[in-house]
Amino acid sequence: MPFDFLGTFNKSQFERLAAYARDQLIYVDARILHLTIEQNRVGFLKFTYDSAGKPTNYSTGGSGASPTYIGKLMAAYEALGGDPFYDLQTRASSDQPIFFQKGDEAVSAKIMSNGEPIPQLGLADAPSGNLVRQIKSWINPSLDRRAAIERKVRRMIDYRDQLQTEIDELKVIKAAAETEGSLENLISEVNLLLADPSYRATGNDKGGDPFGKLTLAPYASYEPGEDRAGPDGVAVERTEDGYTISGGGGTTA
Image 1 (cartoon, rainbow, N blue to C red):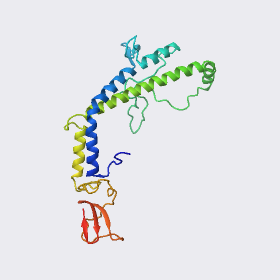
Image 2 (image 1 turned 30 degrees about the horizontal axis):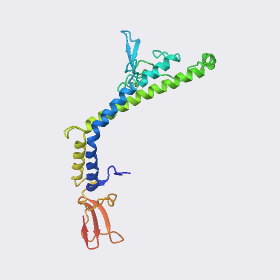
Image 3 (image 1 turned 180 degrees about the vertical axis):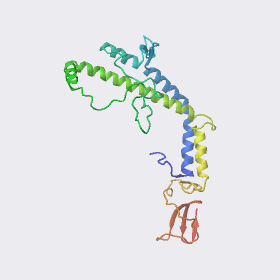
Image 4 (image 1 turned 135 degrees about the vertical axis):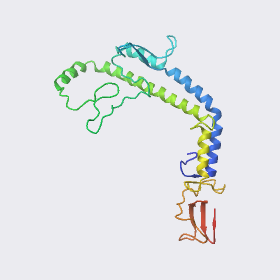
């Protein structure tokens, strides 16, 4: 795997990664354009509501002559008898999650953020459940087809959110160094760690270890001195001076 490291590396390794990442910046605008086109192809699912909170309409993007993929799925869903206002339960967007309302040390949460009660065990609904199961038994194939389309719609909603997340990330990456999370900002943060002698997970190899052979050397318990070696006469350790090979009459960084 290229650049197969995360938190433990030396300066030579990181400079290669930084150079490669900077070279890739020229493709960012094209990637954003491609992702935006893909979003437009997928479309969206947005419901509109009346003053009482009842859904009255929905839109999927696109037009009658050029429907989006979600628009085509919704058309098939309705053709199979599905009613999206009653049967298709979807969220509005990824930034509107449903969660438990806060309880306290005496009373646990009883209701969710969308107003629905938290279900409890012991519904005692076996008689009605058996009857409804028999009512559904002969129409299960058609219900399964509708359920399959519902899953596709939800997957496409999630896919669109993933596309938007990647677009947002790319916009931040190409921003100036003053923007938190931009490529230049992240590189500068790593360079601060590389320059910090007390942070020994990374180190300045001074160009002497471009392949990263010494990066997994153990931390030195104290700074080595002259002729301090291991059982075989040589000790490789990570110190405040970087990667240090001691023994054999001297110490080399």
